[in-house]
Picture 1 (tube, rainbow, N blue to C red):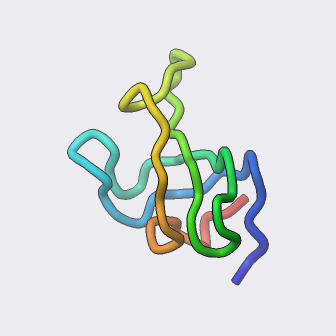
Picture 2 (cartoon, helix red, strand yellow; picture 1 turned 180 degrees about the vertical axis):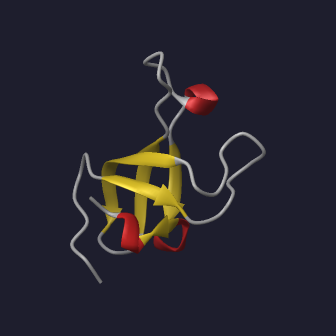
Length: 68
């Protein structure tokens, strides 16, 4: 398992809802439980966030190979 840290970019491995879908790029905002759960956002080009909120996701939603 690679080391995951705050402000790290990742690719979403599965859909969260119809607007936040597999393949979108997100950013780790906070590590809630190491290697398990994270608070994330999905930035838009205009500076806002998709869904206008943050999401709590499990590690299964992060395409580990995409971590930068």
